Image (cartoon, rainbow, N blue to C red; front, side, top):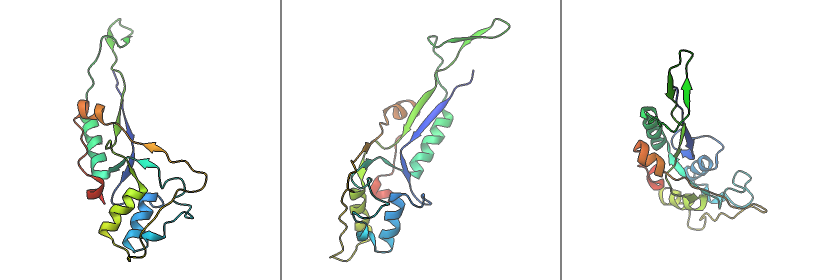
Length: 163
């Protein structure tokens, strides 16, 4: 039978990131010494500043894809049997979905503080991000328990190391 494996990617970042994404914009501004200008009026950041996201470094995401490609599910007799025209039957494996995450959440304020360690700004230009008007922070952190136990996937790159 044919089986399927799904991968649910959380916020993947790293070299060759997606231009226009908040993390990419922050990195560009940090490199140019302009990180402190990301304030409450910046539409790019509105609603994202205080939200907590699970940022996954691209190398860890690739490792998860490679592990998923090697995965072969166990066929369970509790799964529905498929019967061929010649009367033979077999059990189909259940589809499975894995989170590609780190299991740790970071706000953009956390990320800005890390970036400022590597790209310091002038003393009076420290970044202070504030939530946009009328927006509510969200939390999006993935559990890696299934991917760890079934695929052996364990993210290796911390947010600090990825930056």
